[in-house]
Structure formats: C-alpha cells, structure tokens
Length: 96
Image (tube, rainbow, N blue to C red):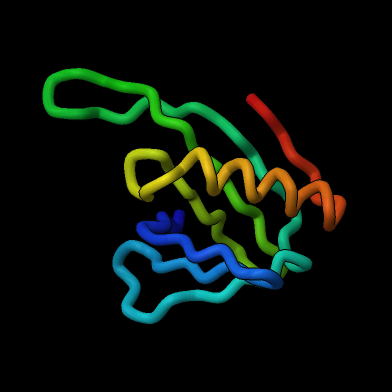
C-alpha cells in the first residue's frame, strides 16, 4: 500500500510524493486503470474517525496508491479534478 503525502496535478500527469519514499513518482493519467472513492476508518488517539480516500489503480503497478483526506491538503479539489480526468480518459470510478 502506497500512501501519498503530496499531490501535484498537471496537464498530462500527476506527481505524487509518497510516504517513506524520497523521490516523487509521476503517473500519466492515461495509465490509470480504475479509481475507487471510499471512506475508511482511521484511529486518532482514543477514537476512530472516517476519512475520504481515493484508491488509484495504475497499469503496471502491483500496489494501489492511496490519497487520503487526512494526509494531503485540499483533498476536495484533488477528488474533483480526478473525476474530470476519469471522465476525459474513460477511467472506471467506483463509489462505495
């Protein structure tokens, strides 16, 4: 499981800075296979809260990339932009 801590959305690709990884990863939008928009429970101190998560399935990658609302800034903009990209490139989107 790869967790994104920073996301830069550009015209033809996105650049992700991943947790525990030094160099950023570039992903072309055309290589996205599927997006999943889910809510997952995350433990915070003594309680559990639900956070929004986008799971990116990339062609040629074995692991799924997670973009979660508690790790990146302006999550709502990222989600909205990726939905437009999914429409443009005919990428399957699963809402759960």
